[in-house]
Length: 91
Image 1: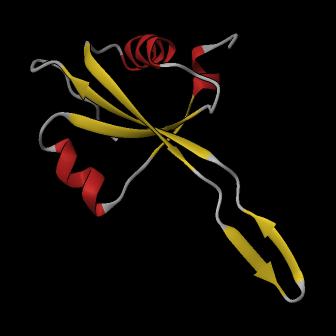
Image 2: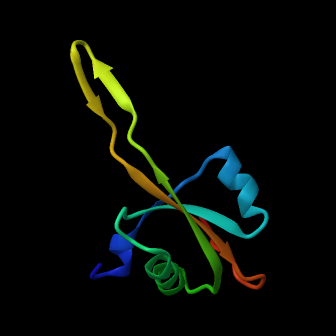
Image 3: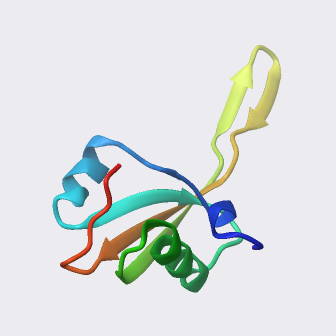
């Protein structure tokens, strides 16, 4: 990973992630090859906040069909990031 913006792809904004944001916890889509330490450093440098801990979830690809052709969706890695009490992110 050359640059921090290559690690963080996008915030995930759903009902569940909005409820988590009330507890200073945010959900991001990150690069599949990134580990927790790299994710923590990227969040701290890009958003200028203090990260308490990082949990990750590997989402497996789902099978999809279009007519007679079958394929799979892309695999995704989610990072659930808990910030320190004095930090917050505006999304």
